[in-house]
Amino acid sequence: MIAMKEWFENATKKVADKGNALMTGAYCRVMGSAQRVLDTVRDRSGQGTTEYAILVGVLVVIAIIAVVAFRGKLQELWSSISDGINGL
Image 1 (cartoon, rainbow, N blue to C red):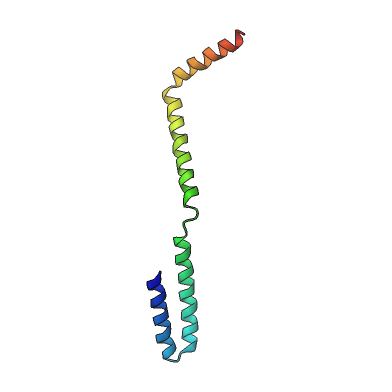
Image 2 (image 1 turned 60 degrees about the vertical axis):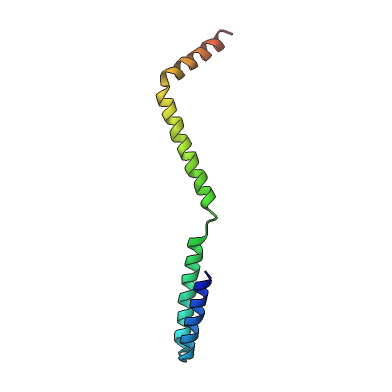
């Protein structure tokens, strides 16, 4: 980040030293836009949310696999619970 600012300042001085004010203004606008893009790319505020979404997705897949793998046992368990409740 510091190297980018130093490069920007040096480049701006070189262009300004040549006396081309129009070019300096355009260059500053382009570099300012490039810096905003870099800042946006470096922003990681949504990273935690994305990680939680991935974690929830993985847990859902594991739950589906478990239900499919233990379908017979789950049906037996559900039937036993249902019979126990109906017997009350």
